[in-house]
Length: 221
Ligand code: MN3
Image (tube, rainbow, N blue to C red; front, side, top):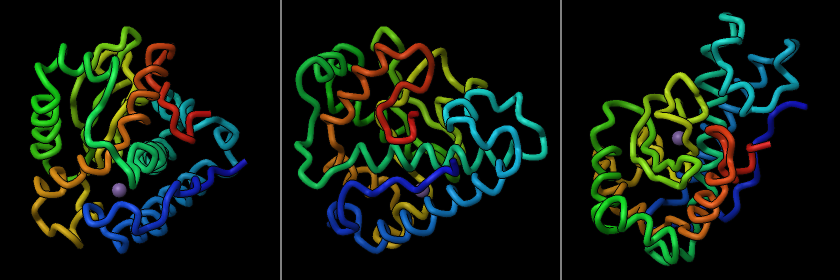
């Protein structure tokens, strides 16, 4: 069963003005679609074609060298974008609530301090990559960033067993049309579209996950 582009859970213009419709359209129909196509091309006709994405990404070292980099980059791209679409929404409430809000306060001092630390991780990632909020099986939170399409499923990277609960694409293709070189402005605007109920669901799932891929994004099967 080839990998498929998941359905976008909202219209291209749903996240305006913070993420413009044209950026969303290109990002989803060109960039994400290309990761899916290239991933399928890499594994087609191999024993790896029937594996789940999580199996592939958490066992990269066991893949044949001839497809390892393609799976890392394109499989990572598919996984990351599949999650990214699900942690944003058009009617965002602006802040976490309940137990996750308490956990954030306890870990980082306050929600604003968490946002500052996350923005720093996003802003200081040189070149293309992602910023992450991850949780371990105890629900303990960490902020970090990765290069390219690397992600917490890749066990050679993961800072302990952790699960992504929030992610931010800081590749220029994610913001350049609207924000040009102003990545910090993009990050600032993006907080307005974060779906904290989805992040909280991911956090709850992380506490029941056995390894680094417990997020509830659509590719987690
Ligand atoms: Mn992207």
